[in-house]
Image 1: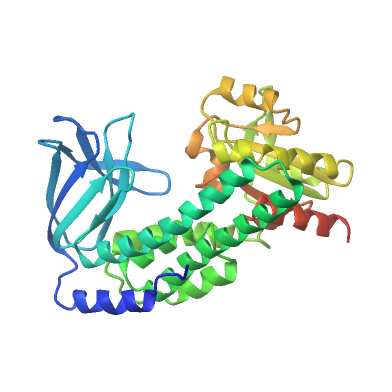
Image 2: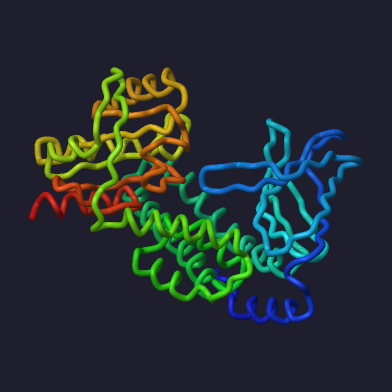
Length: 366
């Protein structure tokens, strides 16, 4: 399947935008799958580390409504209050009528920015569904040759998804939707050179000042923790309650692999076999592993360490996403890996497990 033509999307949005105001009065009308009268829907401002509710609506006759004004394009999230089905979607507040659906396929559309992001998300969702199927097929595979083939297919599909996102950002960095996608993905699917290039092309006088402030904040954190930069120090307790200082730990071996993870994180647990293999294959070769858990429950954390035989040094301040280390290194998705050398210089950050392993092998066999 070919990616949706983003150039055509850009032309369509430009045509729409010519006759629409990007700020002013907005009205959101939406539905929530399985909702009852009286259920709450929250309009939230979500930054990297803070969630703030800015408005609340009740479901009535299966629908909810929000009205307001925006003096600049604003990024908000619509979240259903049902804990069993916490549906949500991003919504761009701008002048006009916005239609929202919260369910298995949540979305917002009806205004230029929302329509632009809706079309992009729909195209991405198709690829993500294909990626999920490949992952499931690989998990059920017992044939070694087929497993390798499926692994290669998974990587190719993931790379396709990442490239589609980068293409969207590159072509639409002057829109709120494009700027939002840049904010979301600059720390996950872009190289330092790609981040620098796109950041340099953000138009002067961006109207979405609030979003731009978030972009600049993340950009500053990222550029200060990119490969080649010195580490940011932190002190955190190990599983025995002893304080450990990161800058002292990295001096002990040629390379330190930092694994940001949590016991409640499915992808983190799925990566355990690969981490165990790295620990085994590079034992005694100058590599140490340090786990930094984003758990909030000490029992869940230590039980996971014990049951999965994660016998390397484990640290946590039990602050979840507010973790001192996670905030210092702008970690907002896990698992996340970082390699540091004995001088305290970041070598790699944000690479896949396979790519990180290859980097370790290269660095320790020079």
